[in-house]
Image 1 (tube, helix red, strand yellow):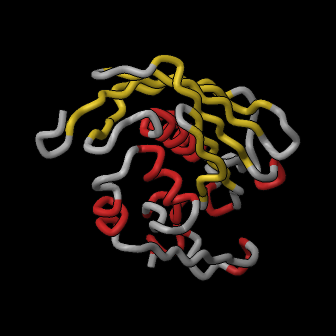
Image 2 (cartoon, rainbow, N blue to C red):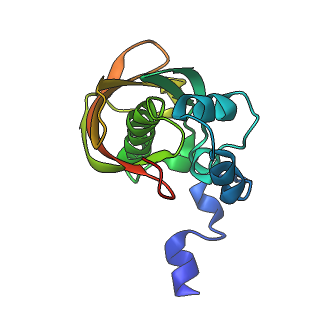
Length: 180
């Protein structure tokens, strides 16, 4: 019982509890759906609902809003379920949003049969984010495409258009199943 009390379970003096239900599709549906598609076609299919979002997008509540070759926009409306102990949105949520925008911007430049993985990510937080920040928009742009390594940058804005974070990333580009 001590662990439950320490966690606040059943302590009415701590105020009302909230809940959040997270549902997702088998991630292999999306991964398999990528086969034979360029990165742009793949990200467009997710945006258009022709393929399900990956589970992380459901967990953190973000979506693809815009897709172009070399540019992508993710949107996320954070709630208290992603707060840290000091009453703001956890930096990891903003980092996840930035990482997704950076890497998926790179993905939009890839031909069918190629994938990527992040090599590094550098995030600078410029202001606190809360649920009152409104919908966050992470705009990822490829700064240098590449056959082996590609570079991108991200700006994350709050609902009032204020810059809340920036990021840079590099991604390793690699062939799938013997492509390239």
